[in-house]
Image (cartoon, rainbow, N blue to C red; front, side, top):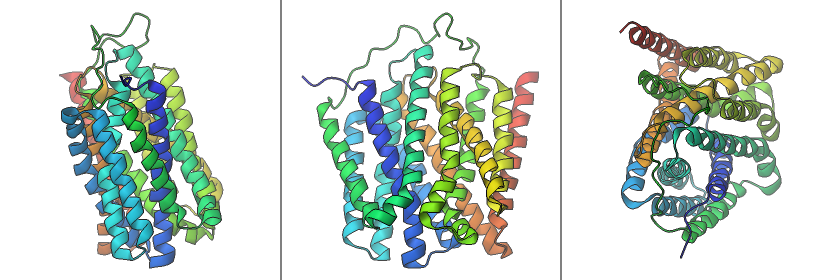
Amino acid sequence: MRAAPKPLSIYLLEGSNSFATAYYFNYLLFLLRDHHGFGDSQNLALGAVHGFLFMASAWWGGRMGQRLGYVLTLRLGFAGMAASMALGWVFPGLIVQMIAFAGWTITMCFTWPNLEALASAGQPSDKLARRVGIYNVVWAGTAALGYLLGGWMVARLGTGSLYWFPLAIHALQAAATFLWPARPSFETPASSQPATGSGIPTARPPYFQKLAWVANPLSYMAINTLLVMVPGISTRLGLSTPETGTLMSLWYFTRTGAFAVLWLWGGWHYRFSWFAWGYALLIGSFACLMVSSSIPLLIAAQCAFGWATAILYFSSLYYSMDGTETHGVHGGIHEALVGIGIGGGPALSVAATWFSGNPTAPAWAVTSVLGLGGALMAHWRWRARNA
């Protein structure tokens, strides 16, 4: 009889998925720049399509996992990602590349909500905080390695490795899911209340979930606008692809370290001050990253950006999963909201550039929306405190 998934095996699948997806997505943008003439506007448009596909597919993927089982849905997702990589590898033409990219995006969204659900299911609040903390450190750390090493991998292994390397990983992942039952049973905790001494507040103001579900898409507006602009930033600074990967991976590693701190210290749970400072850091650091040509300033801004994106993401995932039993559905909601940001930032940037003709338009357009979002969340906080 096949055993239910163990935490270590879930984290291994999660980490390998994060490394492979970070490698393919981020360095596909460089391939499109170098082989197909993509500039900032084309990469932003691609990022917008990616995000909106992600949004719809993640919602669907989470609900599919709740109905069919997390493991079976994962299996379908990994198989679809492998097939998409094979298609892109065999046919280098731009149209097929876009089809492969779309297929990869859709099937990838069958994986993340259900990996989150497997990591969270059946856990009381005190153990859930630990599980979510480890989950965040694993995916963030392996994504950082994927970005850092990706430029050197393309240079040493060739652009074909953008396809065959993720293809091999996703095929192994799909095979690994056959070691698990298609629908494992998890023990339902007797109570969702935290254990004594866990450090998690017993008071859980419901507006925190609302705040986090708004802030995380806005955070991903900033993240994915930055990511799709990196090839242009690289050209502006005169950096090679490996050098760019080294420089611009810093915020990934800072985010990983911040996730570790937030996992080990739960004093930030349900405290608005931590949330607010994180959001303020997001706005300031994003603006600096988008307009600065100073490498020391880029380094400092990345440190702030990593901390900001960590607290906002961790808040969204933790407040989504805390106190719920439908982890697949809530994982899908969390990822769908991420998709809104992934698509919204590039789409807004493309529109702002088109209307203004100003190459700095993405910076001020997204920063302005982040500021409006911050004002709205401050208003919600004020209403909740005075209700």
